[in-house]
Image 1 (cartoon, helix red, strand yellow):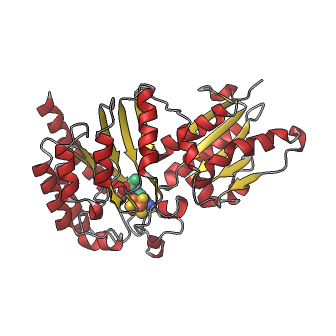
Image 2 (tube, helix red, strand yellow):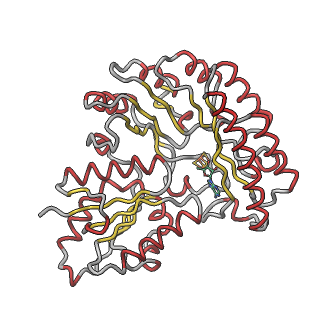
Image 3 (tube, helix red, strand yellow):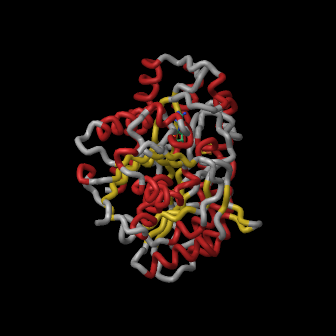
Length: 377
Ligand code: 5AD
Ligand code: SF4
């Protein structure tokens, strides 16, 4: 009888899409997907390493499954697998296999080999974290969790090396998918009832396939018959252009929505973060966006309590939020991450102070978001 697989996803939309890719591959290999983790013979955690908190949650959930009466085969995939490599097994001996983001195509073969081992002798743990390129076919199983909306990856990895961020280490360097392959995936989706698409990449604005840039890609996607609406995440201010805003204003199917993480409003901290822009540059960009993309939504990410962030630096961020008036903001407390450049700075903002700054910006943003909601009603 075919084995039941439960997949639990942590983290960003890229991870959600990766889980769909794994689900599609496993379904094709004869496995049954289930929403009931208790009944599953195989449990896969698709993990996130962007903050310590996300990792802690995974270790504790694995502990829960490890104690189950009939322990399932446990897989840990995604960023934590890449981050810890074989260390996954010493940290969580219940894990049977660990697979990094660039190796998820190997999961069906790994499961086959694990299931072939006699259960009592199941001693061979497997980890795969050396891959660099995903085979293109993995994106074409046609598996989407939502019947009408599809996530479509346009690029993998990141080379920006923001000093706090683990992603360039877990997801590797930036690679771009061919425009034809992206278009084929979208058109196949539309044939099956997909009407909305979100284009995904760690920094979509840097998309460049042999000179074919992001705006050119948007123009092509807009032409797909049957597609009603599409959007993209995530954008990096340093690669966001007026040309993009003009495309957003002009393309009828492109949602007027821009997620543009600012991270900080202090030039000193932005420099330490290696973001490649100043607060003034960001403010000008936001102003141009509002002017050109009439009625467009603007959202952001902010990190408070970066090493060395003074009261003045924090105030600069607070003031920027007040000025830009984001429709929504995701506010995070700085969390030191392995391999990153910021590790060399002391994580010196006390926890209670990080909490306080976090709450202050949350409260401010809530007020701003509420006003937008009221104006819409
Ligand atoms: N600590 C806190 N927040 C972080 N982010 C990325 N790395 C860290 C970190 N080390 C936030 C950034 C990013 C979002 C996805 O997560 O704001 O835009
Ligand atoms: Fe991380 Fe910066 Fe790349 Fe975003 S752009 S994934 S924050 S390194």
